[in-house]
Image (cartoon, rainbow, N blue to C red; front, side, top):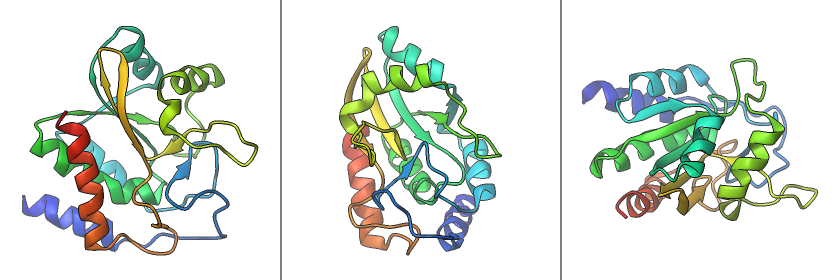
Length: 190
């Protein structure tokens, strides 16, 4: 328990580097942008040491819908500062509800996309109602994205952290963390 608390403290205290102002909504990172920079070492350690997260591919996430399976999906990548802040809160909410979360990494260590255009189109057909539009008005994939799936149907979803939170400018305060946890607890308890 102390180890996880220390890791969470390290995650919250780690600084995020902002080389330029983000162009997208400051509540989330774009799957397709290069604007999110953060400390990915803690993120990868957290995912690997957690007993909540199970790594799957984008195709396996699509298969959950096609095979009418149930579970919680989390889409993110190590360099997304919003993802880094959301992970410990997401894990805590999942543990309180005795749930596992299927983690779909969207970028590799070199920040290359690790899904195809076809996979992006397919997953958007299932989770697009929880997403926003990009600068061209197209539905885009943004992270962190958490989706509760039951029998192949997306019942609920949440993208980003909390409205008004920009991880490039500051970390979430305690009230915002509690608010985000409440969102996850409500989603995971259904």
